[in-house]
Image (tube, rainbow, N blue to C red; front, side, top):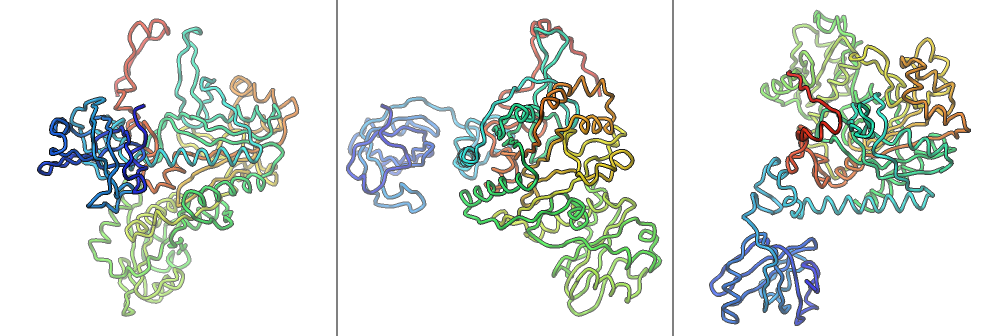
Length: 586
């Protein structure tokens, strides 16, 4: 055998044992007639010792080794004279008697250390080397542990794991599909699933009662830190349940994960309506780790001075930043530039400093009296020493979203978004529909199968924009980790939903006929929820990007730089698929 022990398990109690170890060379240190080698495997690091006085030939061979050589050694466990308290194996070392080079290594393109000198692109190109780093490997181990815990939890609650197809039909609602040409069906295409949504609903019609799957999903959308073209969901569905049943089960699952992984006991979670979240935080995924809730200042500032920008605004809102009245002009200018960035889109920023000495300094001093500014101070709950930042605009929700970006920026600047603090909640009562400027029509906020709030169904005909959904999102630290809804199981209501979305009966039948037909065979009331496993792991690991908890991620352009994908196809393959490529410029 190649090894009797791993590089992470030997202790003082093993002193005197002869052992075999195998792994990669982390580093070498040459000190006169002694050469020290740190040998690494998945489990840890053990120090090896080569002594010129004991075996010169072996010593000379050891000095020919390099970083990342894969080797096997035989030797005896000895107590270290100079112990390393930072390593679990730091009390022992191996006095090497035999050395075998299993595979030499080129000089790595970056150092395989905790703090590497490799940038993102080079590490992604050589991802198999990056994965040797303990920091990255630990993310994979955390992902594995969470997956096992989730599987065991759901199994204990009578969920059955069912795999659903990867090659399915296209359902062009929501994000863009990735499509796959069919050689056996010329001119026709499969789509890769954005989620197993309709398939898990069919499993409920089939009587499976409780389903789950650790499912690969695919969406052709613009990328950011918490998005990848392919990602993994913990996908679940339940029959004969209402919203409270679903939230109870999965809140318990989340509570278990936080307890087991981070040693944190989550309290009973708040259920915040979507409209309240937008009003208080300008976001349907509010970060509750810090305050700075929005204060609407229409009554105080609109029509009470001579500032035309506020007088014509549909919304004036602000945040109170504690203890920041000493912000310099440079800092305030930086914040103004921040809100004017295209990603935020505000036209400007108004500030009011309520100084510690009781004086007031504001960018709108000349437009408003001291009495009006005192009213703003009262409404904002500001104290002496606080800073109030104000945005306005002609669209209420748009301005609130801009103010949300400013709030999060201040949270970052003041180090209030601690990755070791976890604030979770449920967002409920989402709008059933949202307007799409691109499509110039109402779109389903979640998907076309979401159950309307029964109280709002009468408004579907005349005021669909006012209808609430029986939908819910699990939010942690300002990140949407999971979401789901009650599903429509009544064929007539589903047909009405498609009508409001602008589907003709023929189009609805062509795209979703299989599901609507299935509902005619005794569909049970059902509901589901899907967690983004990548996002959940990244939160538990305290990462800024989900890429670091995915073994082989894509870059921000959707490319796999290690495999050089996507890439062009051989003309023979295109001929077999009956495809001709016509790349449009621009």
